[in-house]
Amino acid sequence: MMNEDRPPPSDIAQVLRAHGLAPTLQRLEIARVVFSRRRHLSAEQILAEVNASGRSSSKATVYNTLKALLRAGLVREVIVDPSRVFFDPNVSPHHHFYDTDRGELMDIEADAIRVDGLPEPPAGMVQDGIDIVIRVRRP
Amino acid sequence: MMNEDRPPPSDIAQVLRAHGLAPTLQRLEIARVVFSRRRHLSAEQILAEVNASGRSSSKATVYNTLKALLRAGLVREVIVDPSRVFFDPNVSPHHHFYDTDRGELMDIEADAIRVDGLPEPPAGMVQDGIDIVIRVRRP
DNA sequence: GTAGTTGCAAAGTGTTTGCAGGCAG
DNA sequence: CTGCCTGCAAACACTTTGCAACTAC
Image: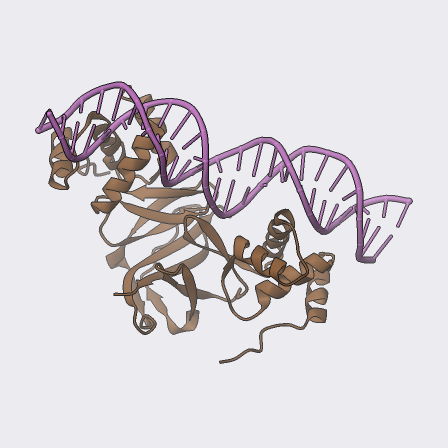
């Protein structure tokens, strides 16, 4: 089990700054939660973890920060459940298993998969990304 | 442009009955809207079209009916937009282009596509379906 | 200092629910 | 008749917004 993808706080600060985001205490904590291990959390879960950690934030700040991280390309939205958006700290191309019972996501590396026969986008449009979701459940 | 997939009202009634759903006027109208041509409408859009058609329904009935059609396997949910669920009258295996500018879905026939290298579902889980969404936009 | 950030509470969305009255079979 | 269906309005869960107070630089 690797665990090399949690940037130390100082790095997070630098990354935020590099994207024009002031590294406030709240943002650092939110980013720490989002980037700690490769998890897929909803805004609610992130808020809960941040508040459980002592350094708390408001709902508004969590949503603001997540939108900012999104704009900066530091996280990605994963849309698999109508009732909540998941934020994925892994921004390299990859896909997901979605455990419909538990509401949990698992990564599938993109280079494991080959897709053939993808049609061209409709005239006048360009491709903006492919999302493959494999829904799984207990038998 | 084919247009052979709008079952005449009498057929709709039979289909509903075959799935244990009483073919009430509201359900017939909702089903007519959903099944007319291969479109992907949100519950809201369906409600609007039903009400525009003279025979109106309430929000609750539209949602109830859509859930019933879903349970009966007569429509499928497509989840691509955090703000609304689309209902797809095409229940055979297929995928979608999603026009992120307009919020519109277009079908991609499944047999046009070949996916290789799909990993096995995690231990103890079975695959429940694959959704491939190609997000497209104007350049 | 000042522009950017936070937090609260209120407003907004899409969806769900409780329940009284209504209709199909 | 009787149980399933409908519709209204209120409740819900998640997300967004308005705005005054605050803080990083």
